[in-house]
Image (cartoon, rainbow, N blue to C red):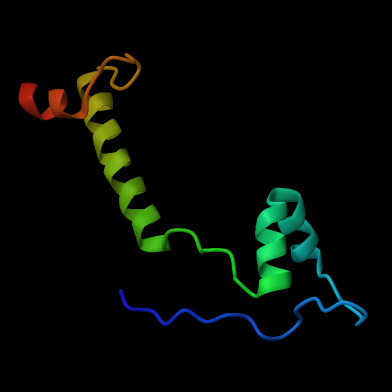
Length: 91
């Protein structure tokens, strides 16, 4: 994944010059003041989250696993000492 890293060049804070902050900018400040500073002072944007494809794949796998447990009427994942490898070794 060779994405070119780009630094933001517009709407960067400069002393003595008017500066606009959007609602999402205020939300960013409440979530992570450091990220807000990096974004608006240095032009370094916040990293994006995982792509939707990964979220969808994890959701599908979890649904399949819980469907198996519903069919067998077993409980899985409630014991804090279970390991992922145990499931495949026993079944």
